[in-house]
Image (cartoon, rainbow, N blue to C red; front, side, top):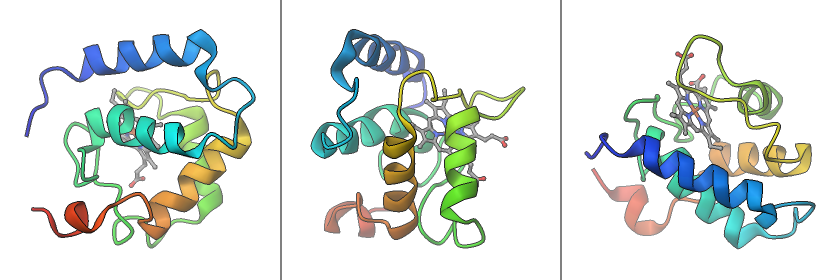
Length: 115
Ligand code: HEC
């Protein structure tokens, strides 16, 4: 598990986002999915099994509603490394990500089984 370069990944991701790649493009799902794997994955693990941040697989999120997951993504978690994403993502994008995390839809067959 590589944890050392998450900062660089996040910085690159933020620059990409700030560059307008996602501005008003909630239909841009392939890029959004890629961003979740790369940017969220830099902390949560490329297979969402956790790293610096906790695992975000369907089993781990069972107790939480899509709304509460979206709220965490939107506002971040104060005093932790989890940043607020609302400056970069629309509500629609955040809800879409939350639903994908809860359903595990972004995990490929390979990453579903990966250890
Ligand atoms: C810089 C590291 C970092 C990045 C990037 C990051 N997170 Fe997090 N995330 C964390 C940490 C650390 C926590 C745990 C916060 C706490 O202690 O409550 C967390 C918590 C969460 C939680 C709550 C999990 C739970 O079980 O309650 C969700 C959901 C989440 N992150 C989603 C995301 C999504 C989606 C992205 C990408 C858009 C993302 N995170 C990007 C570090 C990160």
